[in-house]
Amino acid sequence: MKYIRHLLVLFAAVACTHVGAQTTSAAPRSANDSPVPAASRGSISESNAAVFKACAGASTANGACPLDAVFGLFKLAPNNDVLDFKVSNTVPRVINQNYGWILKLNKKTGKVRVLERMTLPVTPKTWGAGGQPYGMSADRKTLSLDVTLTIHDGTVSKSWDVADGDPPGHYLISAYVEDSAPVQFEFDVIDPR
Image 1 (cartoon, rainbow, N blue to C red):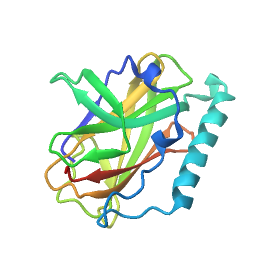
Image 2: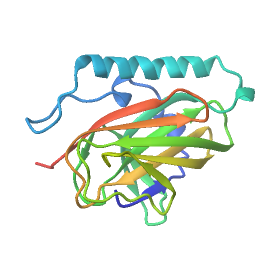
Image 3: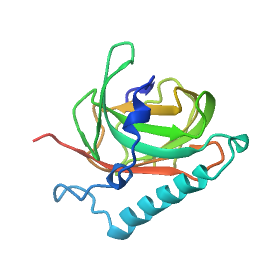
Image 4: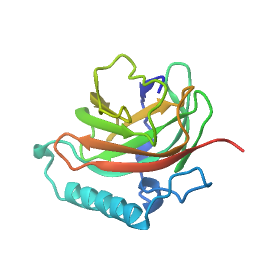
């Protein structure tokens, strides 16, 4: 992972219209992709739905929590402004391809603490955390970042870039907003055809 970018996503509230496939995995694309049991896909979708439902009934006095989420591909300007966002469960393994998530929150402004954990199918050649402090699992397949993000019009977002040495296969990102249960995103990084 070469860079992590915090994005100003003003159009994200429109993009955050929940569709079940946005926060669940796609089926394996080839024999090299890790198969994902249907129970895993269903349980993540159900878990995310429960997180969103709990947040919808929660008071903002309890802190920020996620109401909805999308995952996909970003096209960024050199200053990190978002030029385009496309919902997708697959990420082309192309150097500098931006991908990540957008969360719609129960608060319109302010700052929010997010713990993000990314797990790869195998250990990458290198990890990049954009100069931020991070934690690493013993097998070096999972990176954890504890970040504070600025809420823009009720949304926060986070992106990564595909870097040389990033493995193809099945990835998992878990985003914990303050004290809420995690929102999870499963996706496949695939070699372009």
